[in-house]
Length: 148
Image 1 (cartoon, helix red, strand yellow):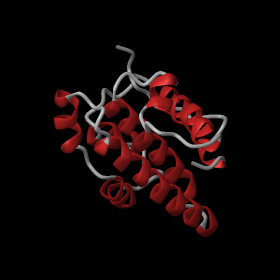
Image 2 (tube, helix red, strand yellow; image 1 turned 90 degrees about the horizontal axis):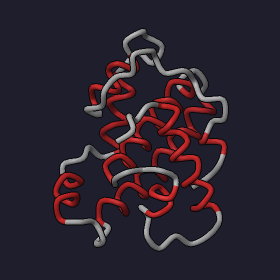
Image 3 (cartoon, helix red, strand yellow; image 1 turned 120 degrees about the vertical axis):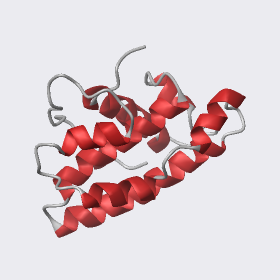
Image 4 (cartoon, rainbow, N blue to C red; image 1 turned 180 degrees about the horizontal axis):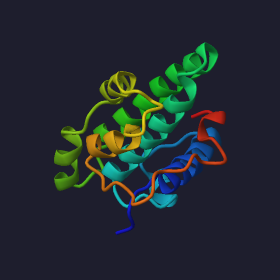
């Protein structure tokens, strides 16, 4: 299974955003799976990593922070749809039931110093993901420029 790092997470979320922007999506997990997510949990972790990157940039500007708040609310709705998806296999549904909510994760991000050197390590630990050997580099195409 490929390691989930920031670049892969933003690629998955960016491709899924394009599918959501293109019209009605019946199965909320499918656009993420089509973009390379290996599970619903990885989908949620991808969304959370993307939120962590967006927050790191947005916290410096009140206007961007308002956009981040809007994006996180939309992300929360997508995550809830994925968690409540009746097509999830039983073993995956149980794991999803224990997943941290987007609102709780965003509150955690607010408690961190988004510019501190341990920001990304803290984020990866919170998501129970392996921290990459080199710190995440900012993505060149920010996924929050599009809409869910």
